[in-house]
Each structure stands twice: as C-alpha cells, then as structure tokens.
Image 1 (tube, rainbow, N blue to C red):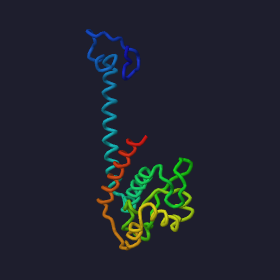
Image 2: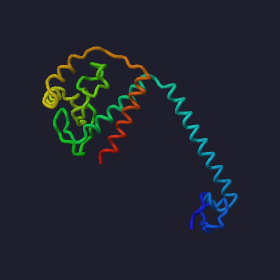
Image 3: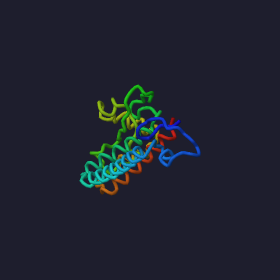
Image 4: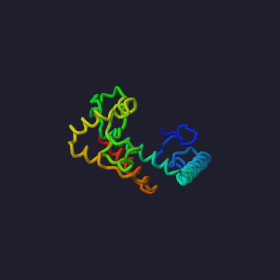
Length: 187
C-alpha cells in the first residue's frame, strides 16, 4: 500500500484497475488537484527565489564580491592543507583547534598575492590572529617546506592589483567547485 501524496492516507494498490489519480500517487480528484496546485506553487517559489538572488547580486558592491571570493579561496586552502601541520608553529591538524587560511604576505601589504595559492597556507587560529601570522616562524617553515626560491619570489612581489567584478565572480565559482570536488574525494 502507498500513501497519497497530499492527504497521506493509504491507497490500495490494484495493478490493473488503478485510476489515473492513483498512478500519480493521489487518492482522488481533489487530492490530485491539490497536489498540482502545490507543485505549481513550489515552481513559482523557486523562480521567485532565483529572481531575488539575481537582484541581490546586481546591487552587491565590489567589496562584497571580494569577500565572497576570499572566503571561497580560504575554504579551498583549509581543505587542501587538511592533515598538514600549522605552517607557522607546526601544531598538528588533529581537529582540536580551529584552522585558518593564513597569508604569508598580507592582503594589505601585497594585494596582487591575495588569491595566489603559493601565498596562502593553513595555520592554527592562534598563530593567524593572536600572533598576526607568526611571520618569523612562517618564513622559516615555508622555506623548509617549499624552498628559498618561493619565499624570495613572494617577498619580491610588491605591485598593487585591482580586481574586476567579473573576475571575482569567476574566481569565487571556480574555488567553490574545487572545494566541492575535494570534499567528495576526502573521507
């Protein structure tokens, strides 16, 4: 026995003599009409929600787009570096402390490296916020992990950069997809 999609009462199932309503999962004409109305209402709500989202996206400022893109990149870095120790102090990633995406060259110091993955690594909350990145230890461990040439390259980048809104939207979408792919791969 099945339940009616609308009123939830049990519908007897007779394979050869099922009515059109029973085949659609309803017990009778009134429930089928009600189910149709609910389906149309859900479809209209979905369209309205999409239109509202589009209107909100049109009035977002560049700062809001920067924030969303940065959040997507940071989420990717935290997942990419899962299991690796803190880049600044070496504290293991054992799930007992909060992880941040820490920039070696800060966003204010070098905006051109803001989204560069060679400049962003996972660190513990204490190093990133309380110790302002713990930069001396960060440099030592970054050099040991990736070599002197990377550290020198990061330190030589000094040009400011302005990002276009279209670029920020694409960047956000790309990194959200990467995060979803990594989440599916990792247990």
